[in-house]
Image (cartoon, chains in turn green, blue):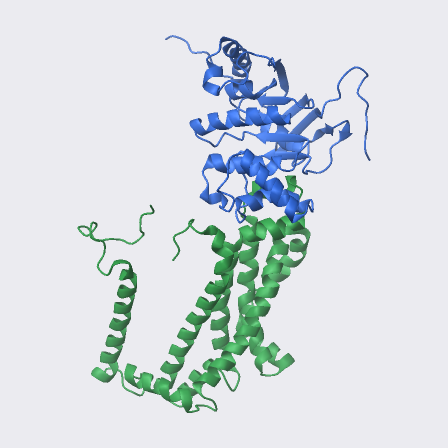
Length: 279
Length: 276
């Protein structure tokens, strides 16, 4: 039997932690409630932070609810969110569809890597936002320009993680594939890629947050819609409650996207069941 | 270009011949000669064990035989023809099993057949037969990491045998196993190879294993490795067919083991113990 990774206080070894296996969730919720309480004390409770610079938790919650139906800066909160999600999805899918194969090609075909690697390495040090002006010049200030920013941010982790996962495989396993008659390409597709799913899916998850964060930044700069645009408009109107409601939405949606990708990639990790206890 | 050569009349053409193999590595501008002209042949149905001190290049020689490494000089000849790229004619069983981690036992064993475009029905039948032969019934759908070392190595052996290879190359296949498992595996392999009349080249650092399994024991010198001597093990020795522990207690076995061990020991470059 595997020893649980939770730290148990001395003296409670026999009885297990209070709340049993729900202990981590209980601790997490308690910390969250604590932060909200401190926030409330600083704002509504004591007015240490005035309503002009910081909204209270209750005000922010009310505003969040109101924004669901009342438009702000031209659209309701769900409309802003949908605009952002649409841009994110396009950029992210393009990054995965192009990035994972490119990483595999880098790992498998040294000549291609030699040719493309300097270009890739140079381009990836240009921050996603630096692509905004040229993207707008080419495609106008619309969904495509924003999706390109997501793509630029999400592409490198797809490439690099796939490349690294493939090159750190046990070389004897690849030799074994050759001796039972697999071609180089068959070895890549049938043996190496399935064995690399832990590293590849880790890259896909990094790409989720990279893309989402870059998009929020890009929406602050340009556009008429989106969650980044919403909080920027809240700032320009001097409405901290709108800013906080927008920020909370950005955080929650980011978490949902990460969970979504985690869930979709889980079947690819099924074979590893039992190697790790999971997180 | 295919080079063909006829064996002189009256002699048997070896199944596998390693001819004048030299291998040197260059790392950090230093060239190390690993193998300095090794000649070795394995006849059809013969089990040849290759034993030598660690670092003598015996595993490298096996990898060259498999086509997985290029010799600096020399030829690998199979059935009188220069051997081509690695493939299912010369299957390899590696020390660290090298199973495909994301495939079940069944998929691992079927993989080579799949690459040979064997129909899925035939694949399933042949894989099942191998699974029964190596005694892995009930573990068909387990993944490699769920198996013990001995079971993993049996999967690796089944994965090679299912392809009915002309030559089976084994690189210290039991080196990573515990002593009890190793003894069991040695007996199973001895039985399988004699039943199936396999042609085997088997690398080991264990003199006992080399004598127990081999029809012929080839001894390598210390690096740079050459074949120093070859000792025939009589096919009809009294201890043949016995378990490892019974065979090792046999006087004839001990004599052979001592003969091989003396040769290996000369290569270890260890100063004899002296009383002080």
